Length: 451
Image 1 (cartoon, rainbow, N blue to C red):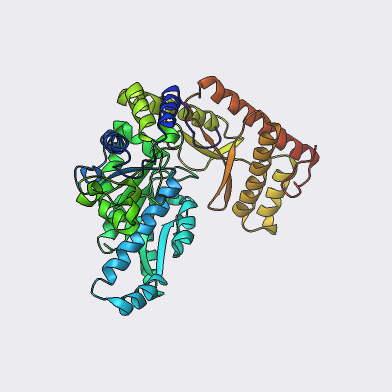
Image 2 (cartoon, rainbow, N blue to C red):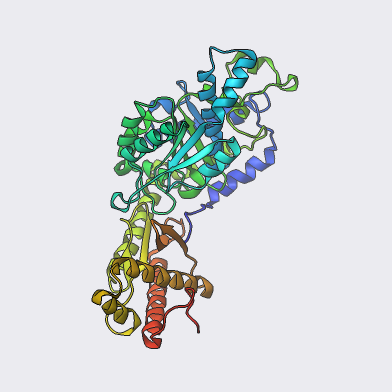
């Protein structure tokens, strides 16, 4: 219930077992025609299940490729975006002049992402040798990146002489599972067509198998790439990160290097797919087989049942949190089986209540800010005490300056009894910490309650 799930199912394990037996290099079509063709087929199946726009299918100019992780997918498309921008900007130049201008432009390139985006975006910028800048989010927007904020950041970059060339948008941020303002971002992109937009849907993108979430798909045609991890919420063993691009030539133009020992008539014909040109490494594993096993075993209805059942468990946990407003406050609306909440300082008797009275009498004007600090300290203590005792394991996050606890119920083995048990442990620990604090009448030193 701590991190987003890392699925491990019998069909996935069986697929891994069989694929390991092949020991195929799989870096080009010649070495592994069946492996290559199956990858293309299962990724087209998945695109249709997720209701992705047709531009991401292999039947057109786009297509999918299995990466090891969403982080790999991020750096891959950032390199492709960098190459696309520089190639277009210098298409009329040649020789040393082209090299000089390319170097000057490259020093000004900046990648953008919501401040709630995964850290892999910043790491990709380090690897690609470009600058990185956050697009701010607001609590009143539930920490979604809005189209207006994106536009303002673009304009600020331009004023500073920088060149925005890449954006990470989110279908489910790590901290709160927020979905960015796709419609507003798409509108802004009409004025900035040179910006490659990548949609990171590593975890929450799996929910698109259900019709009630497929309204998120309708704006995806405005974006260049999309990635979802089947190994998170779609019952497939790690690693199976499915990256889709609208124009595969952008990947191959940036990543294709063909030494003499890799040349062959099939690749030279341009009629086959060499997935080595769609990724950073040369070698690759037969990951498509486990996806085929999982798809053939569970089917579309099995995926839907799994997603919906875990979301119901998430809604149950959210309702339990709401049932104790004396202890907890939900920070953002629950989303995709994730609930994010904080511990509420106790009002009335005891240290916290007395201090609040003092603030109201003029000793501290900003009562709300002080209460937030107390809530942050309490939440941190409760979180650390729960993990220290080891009955359950949780994760935390700092969101807009607020320290919060995250609980996600998307694991295939999650059951109602475990959700209720986890909540009871959280309640018991929160009550213990609050009682100690009120009874001792002392401040928590460095966020630690002494036994």
